[in-house]
Length: 366
Image (cartoon, rainbow, N blue to C red; front, top):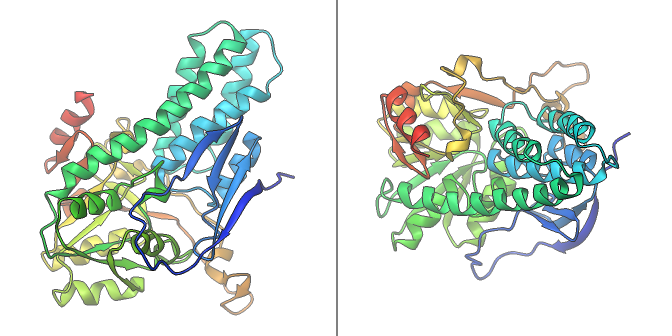
């Protein structure tokens, strides 16, 4: 049975009286282990876990202790580095074959987020260029750390590109969590909002609670409060009301996978918000790094949608919230067709329709 990682330290959370204005350090390599914030414990406590086995990291990924497409890419890279350290094999070919199996096992933990496969491909490509096992192990740790560092810089560039799309005085709606916690630091959608604030603009943010696991209430509201944003939390079902009354000027969300035609997979409920935003002439923006764009997918119809346990819908905090025996469906993501997307913000620039042309140019620009 796979064991959960042990807490490295725990800090009880207190109300933020003075904004911190510092992005959260979500995940990092430290003394031969991976340290990460246990996002299932927020906002009641800030618990840092120490992970020394790649199987524990898989458990952390599956249980959403670490989540968000860019952060999952970093986690996958570190998981492969951990797995490499655990292999007591001298022959390079045997080592690579076993490491490839570990990489596949890690990527399978969350099939929708393409960043995991992207990071695994990059790590394995590096590993295959070596012929000395000890040197490969060292190089993999360094490469995973580079992926983490690059992610922070990518999100800062992404934020700068997106900031011009948000007007001074605007009220912005966001769904799920696309902040520091969903990345290696700074954030995608929330990174854009941080960049807006850095420009001296004054904005208000509405965050949906994001059922069934309340990532918006537990994580996004926590991050926004730390950064001193004027924040209002609403239930998912209130979004249509506020969009229709003119209370929201724009919507910005992250993404877990983007097809080459601009179809976007994101947290379940995103599609609904996009449709209502279009009905009420409210711009709907998506913020994501180029690594979230899947060059192999022409449309969103081929994006795999993760189906999570019905218990996440039927229970909360270990308490049943529905009658015993009731069935529940629990798709973790939905796909928003490109016609509802006003712009896709990346670190290489902003793509607009037709996305088959604009995304292709941005992907090839690298």
